[in-house]
Image 1 (cartoon, helix red, strand yellow):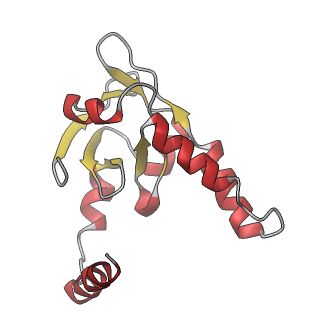
Image 2: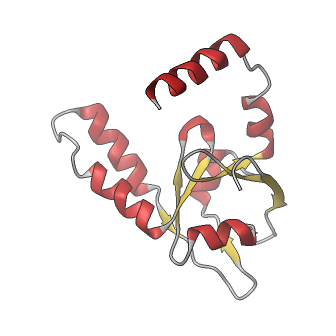
Length: 143
């Protein structure tokens, strides 16, 4: 269900739920990692394997590529649901995404995304519709 967002809160032990509809899409063994714009990406096991395989193509002598690959791999967490369907968000991922309490879970264009509600609101606070229109035109042209 693309475009649907869900508002949740971390509990006292830094756990949260991925909405049931999105968990179904993710299947068993999904992973959480850093994403663009200050969010977290949630990938199914198959999608995470594709990400890891693409990172194997990094040129070990290109520092920026190597740094990005290391950062993604280091900050990847294999989510484990408890009996209530909650997952722990580890400190490094909460810190990266500036998540304190309120989170937005969103079915993004390429994967499920987890955002701090504050970062989400700030990210969309100053949308430039000319830039947005140019991006949409480019997607249409390349699609």
